[in-house]
Image 1 (spheres, one colour):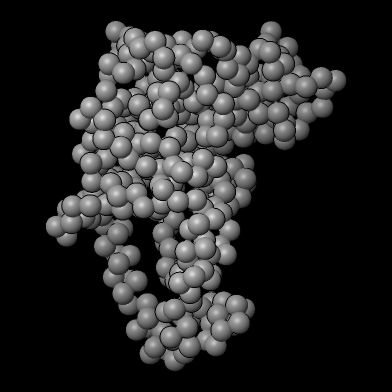
Image 2: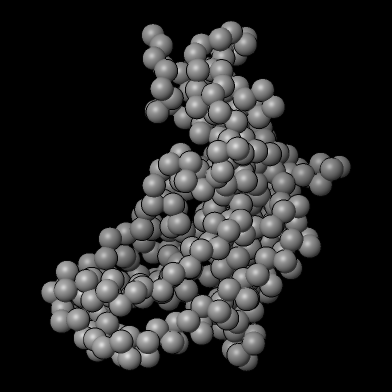
Length: 356
């Protein structure tokens, strides 16, 4: 590939990158006006250099030509958006970046771009379905129960839901792979499933150490038990989350879990699993499709983690405007900053909120 071919190849990516960055900045400011902080913490971007493109083509068995670069590579340009992820850990909370990204960034940005181009429908590859019931649109479970992504979309409102097209909802992941392979997209068909947070290829501790200036990290702190007794030293409260057992770096004669992180004193409270069970929680930044189907309803199902067990609950609205969730059976490791999603007995997503 000649230098001229390379610069011709990346020109559309450079133009698109400039446009996308501008739109993200506008979106970030518009959300900031209605929230307590900006959802986008940092934006990084890159366009592959000529040598990198040629090396990757050769590594995958292709000639380093312009045509192969166009046909075989899907990562010539990339944008890395770090949202509130870092800030939440510094506040002693456990973030849910996939939920916030879907509810406040991804769909809002897609709708904005579609509006500018005069396009009504918005389509993505989420493994969910959409149903109309009682004049309202609901997100419903995908045919592939193992890939169902309803948990992440509880914050979407009707103006977005009514425009959504969800072609992956009625097929399984294996069927999608076969469909791609039959049509010559072998690389896509064989691509590994994404796991974890898309912008955090490392464990979150390593990520924080790379992204957060050392002056903002609290440094060494104390592990204490529920009575405040000193147990040992830790690296700093942002590196520990409620419910964590592995990677504590402390060895006791019994199994202990993180029960609480104390920001002001830089302490991490360790306790047996039995101490982590709670029977109620409060939610902020909540969204419900239909209030009457959740508030005061007898049969509401709640999940506090993706792919984890569901629990029945009763939900009421407090005078402060929070959702009070009383669990029929207690749940362990209810972490501030995480999400809770509500469902009915048919699996329809009724809404959700952020745990306080």
